[in-house]
Length: 317
Image 1 (cartoon, rainbow, N blue to C red):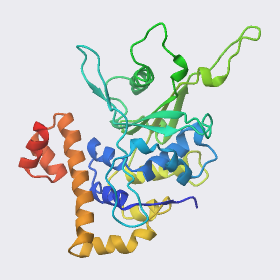
Image 2 (image 1 turned 30 degrees about the horizontal axis):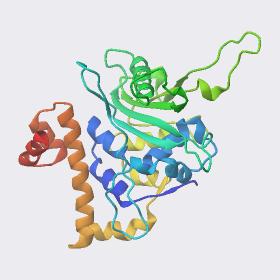
Image 3 (image 1 turned 45 degrees about the vertical axis):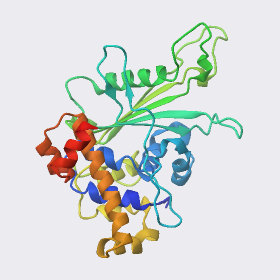
Image 4 (image 1 turned 120 degrees about the horizontal axis):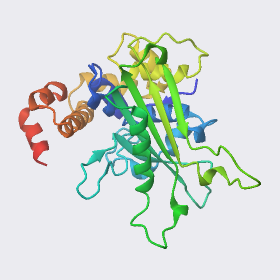
């Protein structure tokens, strides 16, 4: 089994998001773990076919990772900070990507030149928010692509443009026939006259992936197309079932952290401090997401478990 070595920050995120209750902010927190991202990317990004999950995790670029380090020996932080999460024009409402980051494109990179994929992952509670998710996804991709270039001039170098992926994960309000399905939309060359074709890398710059889950119970069978991805997403994107850790452990190996995990839950001192620091950071991220969504303070207190004073301080920051 192609399992990834799991870090303490991912364990913390999984503990923090155990209830979920359909809250988007909690979904976003668990998706900030590189181990989780690697499993998703390996199954959805064409450039990563044939690579192991550990290899894909290593493709996520170092400058997309927070500077918060894990103290335990042999493990580095796996929380993804991401690229600039917003795009804004004069007099335009600010829009935010849920999780935007860069990852190495192994098909185009060389030892001397690194070419990136620009990836946006968007967890969505509903597939039918009143407009087609696909249209919004394409719009976000276009903005992600155009944001790679500064003000256009006669000397603008379009060779600098790198491929963008938008991966949208929808949980509810999905037609029954579309439950547990994946749709991929990309730019293709449909017709040429004479010998007018160009190389694919010159136009293959945007790919939209729409993943539709559908319910809290996944009844797919091993061997079904998309089975590994759907089974994993179903485990982490809904409230925890009794077999949650058994399922997740088939993808992420936490055995190296087992003793630290047990110790951090029962002891005073350093182990508990490490554990509590990771959980507190996760609570802050949930509060920030809910503040961006203009949720009431009382609701933020309920889901983040933070005191009102700390939430108000985050609001003022």
